[in-house]
Image 1 (cartoon, rainbow, N blue to C red):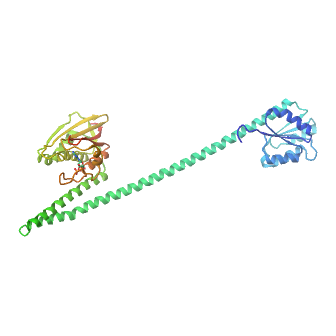
Image 2 (image 1 turned 120 degrees about the horizontal axis):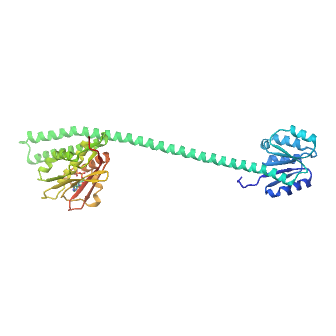
Length: 402
Ligand code: ADP
């Protein structure tokens, strides 16, 4: 039922002319008028419909108005339906009526003024419609509430599912890390044995090995060395995911001093030039000391490695402030990188050249990316083939320690 639905009004009188008179008076109210010409018929009506009010003639043959009202009250559906008795002004009847105290009752003494009848009924109609409206709103509220509860339950379920998957992923990740760490670790022992025995073979049995056998043993040693480098890089990479990274404010100048010491060999051999230009007042950056040294070392090692043959490597390092970030640039005069490879080279094992020309494992830049990411920063490159490369890493600025 909508708020505009008509209210039902039950008119009970045995005389058709009285019913008609009631209908004429109440027609203006625009509600749904239902007729009953006896108490029995009235009872039938209240069983089938809800009424805003019942106008009940007291004097009726058979079941009179009071008896009818008593039965109406017995029925669950009409227990609280307001009843207005229509009665003559008779003292004895009034006594009966006053003794009658079930539910909402009222009375009108005949002959009644049409306006009074109309306004009395209108009050009951209003009450009924207000109650209906309240009931509808209550139903709506219940529906909204149920929807909300359902939504909340669904969301909770989804959250639990996400949490469960995250836990699963975390566990799988940990397992994989532990696995790759132990594999890498355990692989190195037999490898060192191969390397050592091949070395021993070529040294201790040099006189008995022909030049071809000597070449083979040399190759075994070289391959074992390459594999060892690979495993060491893999170990370093997987360590990056496992270890706790505690950030502290670091001075990029002292970081560069350590990197220089680490890469001295790589620079000395090709006679490479290193220029570092970081102002003394440059802000500290938030970083993990060993990780940052490792990251920058990898960039410098690449910068001197990937140069055209016969070119003397020239590496420039400088720092730049960018809002909340401190950016460190490493520029080389090397072979450069085509733009389509700029993302790919930061992934594990991605290499653009054969290891005969430029030896390496393809893990260096993966360590750069992973390391800066774990320190809350980013890494990138600007480069064109033949024009050198400019790699950068960006870390959050931090306060200088007191
Ligand atoms: P690796 O150096 O062991 O090959 P990296 O992960 O450090 O592995 O680098 C991946 C690839 O990116 C290199 O093989 C090379 O092709 C390219 N690259 C890296 N640094 C430079 C550079 N400074 N100039 C040109 N190419 C580079």
